[in-house]
Length: 148
Image (cartoon, rainbow, N blue to C red; front, side, top):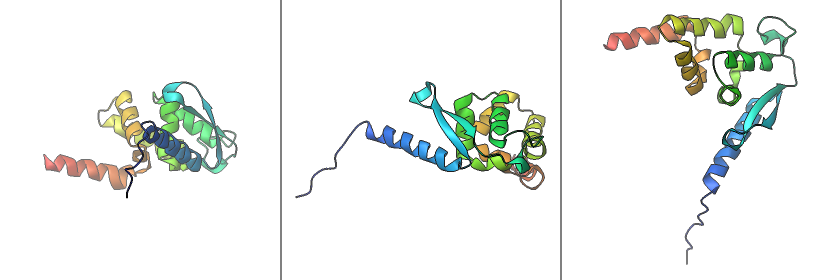
């Protein structure tokens, strides 16, 4: 005789939270995460433990993770949103702020997006910052415009 599956109402949200925590931890291998705060029970603060000067934003003295985290917050994200964006696209930590991230944001603003719209787009799809403006984003916009 088969028994029906056990139903525990709080299990799916608990597993989702655990999955998010594991994804963040795996994505931030060179960083240590501290749980602080109040939003949805857990807020994440990225505390870099390794220096990646090659990918630092402007000077070798800044810690890469901190610089990227603060840069995302400068776009209008709170701590939780910035940490979640990095967790969803950990390669953001490898992109140069001056050579990759800022020019992409400026290009998006040039399309007529205001800062809150750019921040929302990055929150929803942080991989957007990894796309080449010349080789991908411009061509995609031209294709979309061609559709009418």
